[in-house]
Image (tube, rainbow, N blue to C red):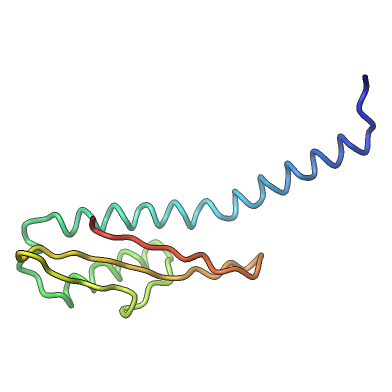
Length: 109
């Protein structure tokens, strides 16, 4: 049984749309993954327990901006338990091709 040409074209169009969406979303998720790894590594360093919250916040903010992530200083929350810092970052990424905000987060644990 042979498929009609229109069904083949429609199937390839849907597949193409999925590929385009993945290509557009993947960089944001990859950069968030990199930021999460950095935040975990930063909080696990012994020197982090002696650094001020503002210094830790500045380091996370610098890394986020190098990754082109729209993280603001208010998006970074730092708490301490037994002297060890816990860094939590929540931020929104506006997608230009579709009216949706991706809510991303990176935490040290």
